Image 1: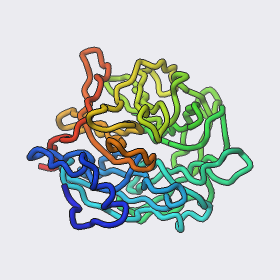
Image 2: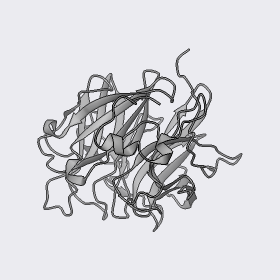
Image 3: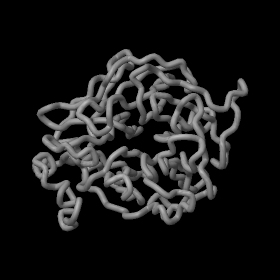
Image 4: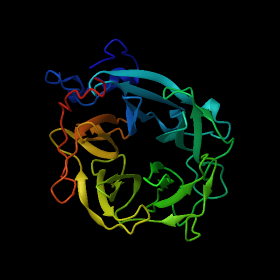
Length: 330
């Protein structure tokens, strides 16, 4: 695992847990995949390179920048510090978190939540920044939030951007136990009505839904994943549903990622890698080290994700060894 020479501050603290210090088997990444307190990982593949964009999991008021990590093989990771900084988002005054990335027409778009608004009277919500390279630097695109108000009871946070086969770009988002889907304008400067005229469509799949939505398509079906439980606690977990349309309806199938008292607690807020060359799937998530009760002490990890013959996601086993190398380039 890289970055052994970067010890200091929170980074040193992150490496003091037993799980973090355990040497992985040869050829494995080991979990966490990189040191430091990082949460809400967004997984993306750009230019035959794996990228992870996590929340910087510090005290809330200190979540004022994002780092990114890249890898050619899932095992060796390179840190790209401060790819987006709060100083480059004029309207962001408090914490920023939960990135979502998209590439379009040679530009890279970085969606994020900021200011943690509690009502429509406050400035904040979901923003978007843009860069010429996946490592940034990203700069605010709009000078204001993309979504700045509550709709259908959903706090405007935890956005995920989904590109459907027909070319439509959607954003799924929402906290406070409500999930919405919106259709993005082609230039990502706003949202526009869907075919039925709806702009903010609620697709909350179950009462257990809390936050952290994610969507992907496999074999013609739409998979909707989300997090349940409290993000600071051991019960944080991931559940999912399957639908015939990105607009739903979705009905909860069950949990597929949760704590293992022998490995780590609070496993949740996930993303996925899909490697087309061998049709392999990986779930990227954060978790808490055993025995650590600080809610901000979250670490990014990766596991294999498998499906049964009917397309259901099999329960994920969380591990300390992580995954083997899988290079994207010949």
